[in-house]
Image (cartoon, rainbow, N blue to C red; front, side, top):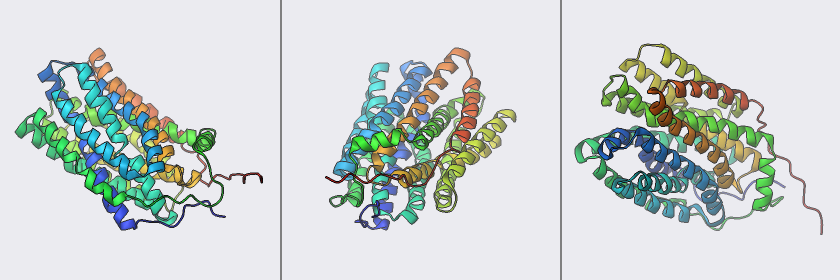
Length: 405
């Protein structure tokens, strides 16, 4: 008997439209947080490490809450988890604007927003995609959802820069808080009927976790995703300040982040489509290799607006292109019954890397006055991730049938 899930209950078009819109909002809002680093630290009199630590906690909380949000979505449906995540998102943004101490800022921008993102981003949405899109289109569909998140970055970064400039950084956060509540009506489109257990061998949560963490390919995927988190969050949060430190205008930083988002649409869609045709481990290894090469070239040439734009376009193609093949491999190996939960654990590794990337960026800058050390750490980790993904086995795991009573 096949171990795949029962026939899809929601149309693929509905799932992709609503899921893409949710990811556009949730990922688009968070991608612009780097624009708040300087106005908040200057207004509050905080160090860059204070801001960076809060965003680092946000990424860690996002990762830690990811498996829980994913498990709840697998058990009770994505709809309820998305509503809770939307409300937390609005609360976190409002309290982020009201915080007057580093501790309060860490609680709002860090813990609350991290938990909100766990309930409104890829792990939850991909679980719905996995259960409602046929396996022969799953990687492509995940690429479409990831491309939506990329478009959100392209769309929202200029909007957030405009909001900060015209309304001030605090009011801009309040406006975004209201906007994040739009996830609630979109979640209706992902409200699934009662989940039908797959035929074949049925697993408990404990069995699924034991199987995954004892499977080498799952651990290699987690190792590679750790590196992904380190690189993209360090660049996303610290790039605006890095460019300003070198005399480039804030408009260059805004354009750089927008270009990352624009070209990320191309990269994530292409990665999802290629994942239907090529071994996904080779796609992932190539992405990490090209990231390291791009960073080395960027650090080696004179820093000009044009070099920034070229680097941003290249990194944009490679930015979230790891997401569709990584999650598609998890579904391919373990099936879709616990896809949100297992994807959440892989993403937790990503967020540990994110924590270190954003926090070390602020810490080492305050210590050395430069981001150079962190840039080269990102290069070395990219080489490691390229090697780590090569041993991944993509075939479905073979499970023994339960013994007869």
